[in-house]
Length: 265
Image 1: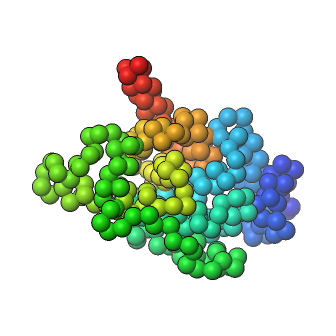
Image 2: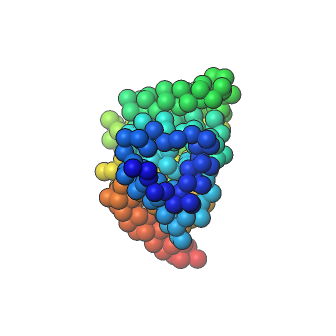
């Protein structure tokens, strides 16, 4: 059986993988037909739901989603496509580094190894240029400034308040999560927040953190349409339940953000 791929899906796949055939063509032609026509035509050409996203932004979201749902084989398959459509080697590595605070080393490591493998196969020299901007002495203060920018004054020096056994975690959030990772180059603050949002959505069960990061995204300059569109474009990769849950969080938090703006006016 030869998969009946639409012309639009065929053209988009050729853009992602110039001159190469899908490995599942021989073993799973029916699946290839359904997946390719959906993911590479219906979804990317949608009116709304992120169909108007540029390919670089789309793939920053998709790769983040794959880290969140632990789809390492799909990540390895799609990372070369991301590099074809404008994601740079530094951006690819920074997406993986950014995930460290949200999935931990145990779940991040396979993606770091996969990214290195993809980059080496493309002839990239590792390590890539360094992207760090803080020192051991400056990281906590720099990270805390970003926390305040994204989440409000309530987080300023949060490690000085609250239960004693929670204060170290608050200090780690400022110094490590934000001071070590968010301050790096390679991706802008709005891009890191978008990646974090999709990564949390793909994990499932992180709705409180997801709602907080919707607000952080809006404060960083990403609007509701971008957030909803980026998440919607991940349906083929993380499925409907997690996308629908994320869209509900986005709508609720965006309404809250708008209400706060009206109250301040």
